[in-house]
Length: 219
Image 1 (cartoon, rainbow, N blue to C red):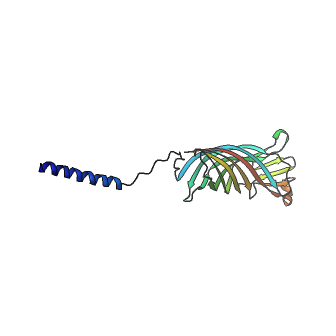
Image 2: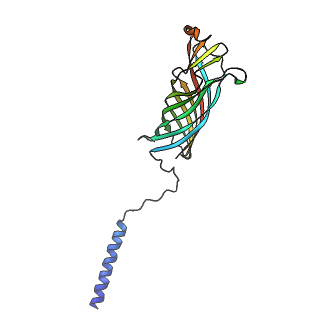
Image 3: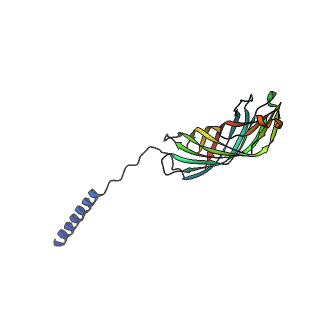
């Protein structure tokens, strides 16, 4: 009888202790059912390609059409320690030129390597996140005619030029980016000589302003 009473007392004590411990256990937070973007890596690489529509701007004005070209190359996105803020960089093969002549039969076209570096802000919108970015770029001429005659006008291409990018676009599920960029030329891409090199005193600078529609895939 004493053993039975002792066993019952021990069981009652254990039950009381376990119940008290259970009541003091911290509650587990409930899982949210809302789906968020997966976490993006601090540094991502990708490929960018698209279409250029290049025009020119000169001190005295040039009656020239726009020239269509392409651009493509690798890109990189670096996430800064500020929500939504990134630095983008790219190495792009890019075509620009001056449209001249009937049916563009005398177009002046050159191929460049562009090195843009921009500061990007991505707005916190799910699934399709808009972004804006801006920053400088440098262009290095690769191929094409150094000098080009269009009627009585002689154009001479510069080997290095600089400009500033203004971009707006959307980020689709953090993998695909569609963007529209305006390249504002800061330094001259060409030197125009009315009547040829003999009229060096009348030469003036010509800048290239280019619209770029791009699609990029990030990994």
